[in-house]
Image (cartoon, rainbow, N blue to C red; front, side, top):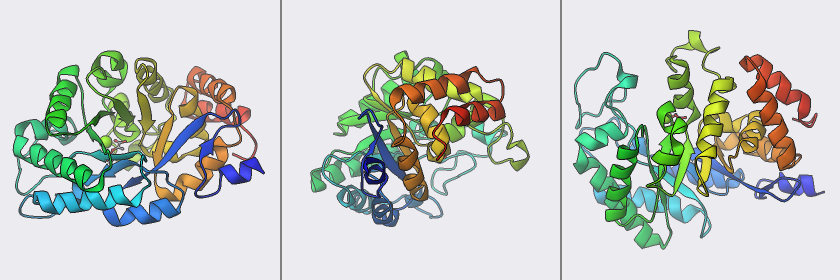
Length: 314
Ligand code: PEP
Ligand code: MG
């Protein structure tokens, strides 16, 4: 049956009306890539490159980085979407070789792209390594920056990445200002990926590391879903993905597709269930499910409303 085929590990994720949704994996190490592929990932929606930088005394060399990036690119088929996120360190993930000092509020401090803007040597070396990996493998990596809050920052990253030879440039949407102003902020880039972990933290003003705040931190918060929709509404033709944990929840994945997301990246273990859920709905159903979640007044209500409209198998 079509549904069974669509949810097979190496199958495409296709809605019942034929709409294609990319289902990708989040990885933190090149050695995760083959496993992700085996579990049905069509590519990588988020390669957290921090593993190369954390817990060491010196920055990784360009050769060392090139090898790691090329390994991931080669794992997937030609034309696959493989997204590299540039260094997302700083603040609570301090680097021995780029310590900007203690901060009162690390999550609101000089992290992500803000660190890259201070240590241009680090970002330039990383972009050079990514361009070299592209040349070596003949593949076209997607390269995005974390924690972009303004159009000026998107422009800064885009021109630097393109100058280094990167062809497909994007940003993460994980700061509410970027979600709300996506038509302006995304203007300098080709694609975007929404990081719902940080987007939820910043929308709800709730520290994502604080377990007691779990109720506030669920991506089922209608405000978070609305920010995802705002991002898609202003994105024009650009491919917008979600790479936060929200994408791995089969029911929430339907909501995300309903507001305009066409690429979902998740922990590899979640892929089969998400593909199965997608393969049982069409776009119109996803839109209705999303509308119901958006009309809700709480995360619980949003989830219950979505569940009522979804196929009973989800
Ligand atoms: C996110 O913020 O949702 C995200 C995917 O990035 P990280 O969890 O690495 O901050
Ligand atoms: Mg993040």
